[in-house]
Image (cartoon, rainbow, N blue to C red; front, side, top):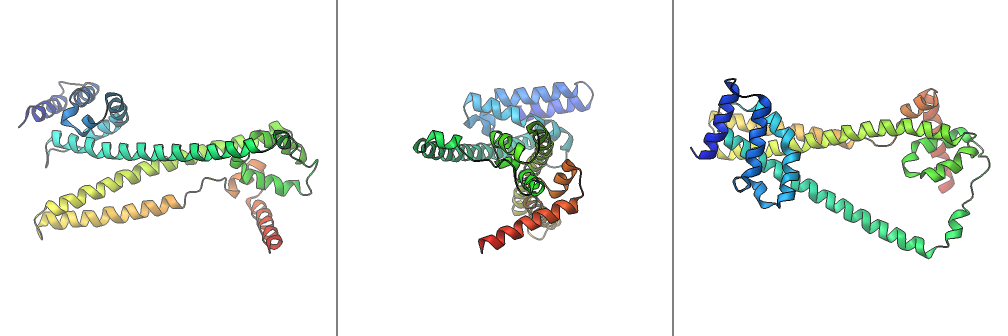
Length: 277
């Protein structure tokens, strides 16, 4: 057994025997990974990037201690595998963030170029009607699409709807809180999907390493099938999660029945389809 295996397994035994607190165990594991990057995949990154990654990894290390059992690989192998898989996921997250940021800046640059070609005074002369013909329907449609409307535009629309802008802002703030909750739920679901994806990979590797037609091979085969089905189910579920305000939420904000919102938005959609034909 290598020195690092002896160290990690030793501190784990000390914790289980009551000679060390949980906080001290997690701190020692954290410090060991940080000070020995050449043992782990994190050594491929710069010092600053490595510190960011280990800080992001810390909650997983805490949960990993509870999930570890002495059956199978050593604690050092278990932690190394966790770090390697997490580093891969962290790299993918950083790559996705860079792509998203680059796309945003490209789009922003094009928008700025278009704005520079327009007459600035024209933007100030956008016509806002003094009163709309059906303020109730327009308000429901506005609440449905508020995320894409700037606050300056909302302030100009409020009088046309017969509302004070503060009252309109209060309605939208309620929907923003609900949207934030949905975003947190979706982000948690994405993390679970990432974890399930790597779980599938781990089971597949263990299946390939097992002796064909052995009891362990059949057990791993069953684990692969179950984990893949769960991954598919989770991906289908996240596809059904919507970010825009639901009709029920709009009804709650307005203090009316959901059916009223359903019928009014349906009439708007039907009218738009008729006019487009």
